[in-house]
Image 1 (tube, rainbow, N blue to C red):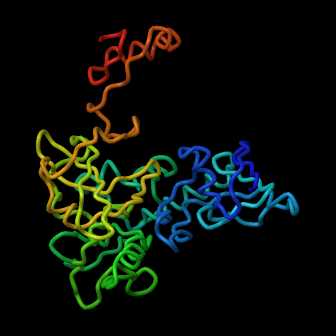
Image 2: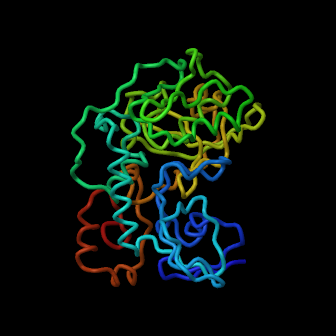
Image 3: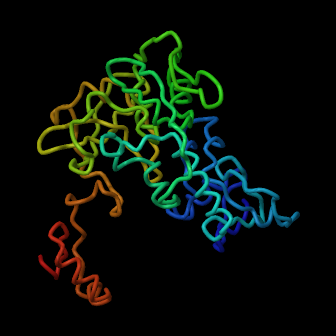
Length: 338
């Protein structure tokens, strides 16, 4: 085991744990942002630089600080290490630059992007970005490429995180897409215009942190914050398919099916295309209940009730909070408005 200090908080984790995963064990909200790292995908991480942190002390044996910021997703902890994330002005300043770099060529099409409301880049830009940009050149453009009837590719939105490539590599035997070209000409493609049609191809949609790969069967049907996510499962006959999903309802209709994500926004159990694209009737599934959603997420708006609070909890709340909750129709508090 190794003891480290992360933003002034001491934590003990197994040897070999990365700084990122150590922070997630402490509190997911305190962890550095991750745009390319994805725990289930071997080899991911170290590309987007969004998770850079400052190591103020390398270890108990060698307390010297590391000379440069390091990527927390690929840097293992050492006993006695001191890590600065949000407590370091240098880290916060660098993150502003990372956001600016990612947005240089990213189109401002959030109003028509199906990823809006659950986009990691939106969250990253909101938390660490600037309201202005210094970039004055033309944005990068690409020819449209058809990669099949189920997945829509928008290359202008891609940040080259490689998640979709690793997913296809590690879930299927015949990957047909990858990163073509070099430098600012790099793009996701199939080279000879093949279609991506293997049984687990839909998982590239779940791992994409932006709107570069989206579900054609869900395309332009509804905004995510108007839908209600519900956890469900079924006995799938496809090997390796977990059969555990999230159904996204609008009224009685299932508009889309996605893999079930954990508190870090990662899918740990992959699902097949049959479950994702063909099973969109409630009768196909065993419903488990509403999917847990972060209260700060736009997905939670108007869908979930706060738990019933006793009078002592209400008495401990600031008067402004009690007044706001009582006046907000979507929220129901026991003891306030029933």
